[in-house]
Length: 305
Ligand SMILES: Nc1nc2c(ncn2[C@@H]2O[C@H](COP(=O)(O)OP(=O)(O)O)[C@@H](O)[C@H]2O)c(=O)[nH]1
Ligand SMILES: [Mg+2]
Ligand SMILES: [Zn+2]
Image 1: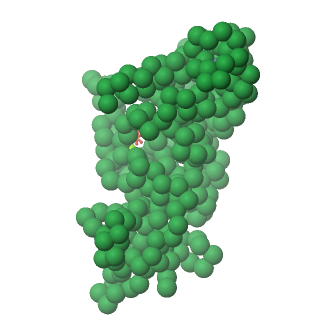
Image 2: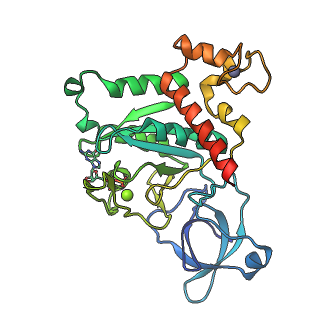
């Protein structure tokens, strides 16, 4: 039975891109429009974009999804299966880099167990002289220190696109980031022939319009797939436990092990090694501040639900 990957789901149809022997998608061929077998519905299973499936061709050139292979991962927002890399795009300007949001994404990624790649877009707009100091370099150094890979790109100059392409090879990735940071422009630059809609940032609102709608996987020519997620997906902390939050800040771990009290929240406890590390400059101020903010946000949410 032929195998494929669901690249799009729309109005009860699943669009399956055939995989050749060796599991490489055949980018040249077009996707097969499939219905799912009735049995999935009965069992309450719905195929997801990103699912690897067996399908049969039916007489009209369409097909039927017959079996869903076991999923490696399953994201809820966006609803995509088998994602193993989250690419977090932040522009150096227009809109300004938002480290609070970056740390929020990282918390969710750590919790989901995905690899993260931080991409600082619109490098052509960076102007260290006008800014007084090279804030982009500071941000890079800070996140690299924690252990995240950070790369700089520009869809205008082509900077960083080869490296980014290499990182996406053979994986299913999601591109996440606020509207207007250049996700669609970057994908257009990476995939010859692709022409996703891009939009001017609305100056009045200070944020981009939402031009990307349903989830769709875009095949790259190196066996990778990318989901350009619809606009800015709302992140809340409802699925994360208060105790779990600090473990999602990777660099806290080595200090948290040595806190005096078990279950230390690293906010006020005597003998807290995390607070000490922050005071010694071993943990970045902004990371610690965001930890405190998220903790408060979580407590507030849990009170209301
Ligand atoms: N200067 C500059 N502008 C860019 C770059 N990439 C995207 N843009 C612009 O930023 C705006 C938003 O881009 P878009 O790709 O639609 O962002 P998305 O909402 O994240 O998909 C558009 O006006 C693009 O032309 C870049 O590398 N440099
Ligand atoms: Mg877009
Ligand atoms: Zn502590």
